Image (cartoon, rainbow over all chains, first blue to last red; front, side):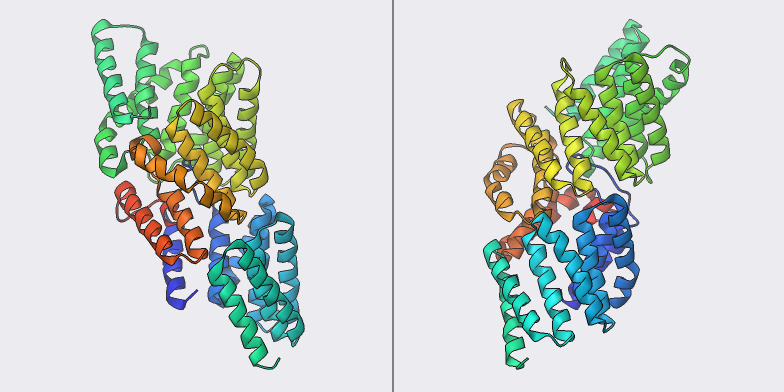
Length: 167
Length: 294
């Protein structure tokens, strides 16, 4: 997500949290949990450490309280990014492992691919290019199978960059 | 038929006739209740301008119902009072800015208690729907699911006579499970709701069930399921006005996400713009609900 795009997402989320909620019959209501998870996920993708510090713990606590497994996994992934931004690569891999275990159990292929990408970055930061390459490869294959073409292209570019760097 | 403005006009004509005939008080309560209920249910289907036109009639009827409630509270329980309490519960959040969730929950709990005393399953289902919404609005998602599943159980009892309630109970239980991430449990309920809604030609409920299913499939990354329903959505848009279906902005927005993530940026942008246009018509350009930003 580009910096400008995250600013737009943030603007909408900041407005949304002050607006009244309506449990309409077609399911577009936004719970506080939805809000915190959305914000944490968007902050992770934009590498916004300040927003992550604020929303990742709220997302994690809310998901645990309500037993929302998908959201718990998204929150763990965001925590992993937060750890990576704080130069804690080992901790980041541990968070991404937690997230992956849930996503794999649920079978959410796009989320698995995104999380493999985050773990690959953490492996690279921790000096483990072999594991990073393996994760980027697996992510690209998963994105291809799902038909997520832009994400597959991005995964291959990250893999190529890793190989070009000689790592 | 989900044609709110025409229904409200008919209820008002009936109220006029009731005043001339000096008929049973319960009939007037029922008519006022239906004005508020129909207005609240069609608030977003008719768009911002359409709703402004209904608002005066709804406010008059709501004031009459609140006054009536104080009188009938001293009387023995009655199915119409349960329905009245349920409608006042809905009005307390949908017709107020900001929503009065505590008031809504109070009315809903009173409705449930009265329906239990009456042992009236249809009214109990109506009251439990109100409780599902009120607890949801207070952020009590577990309690909301409990009320929704209890309602579904009531409507699953042999001999339950109201298929519309059964259909909405399926939708409500599916929605409550979806909000907690229980997608695999929600999907069968919503598919059943979609099937019944198609059979009885309840277009609004086809839309509701499909929109909820689309969200479950999106969360589970089952994009093929969403793409497989493209023609169903296009048929709904082509055949029915928003007044019959409800606003299509939400599922169109979800479909835009899938198209964009699949690499068809042009199709994604087209759906996104279509969704935004519906939102502006329905909610206006500013002061959106939380839902609209989502």
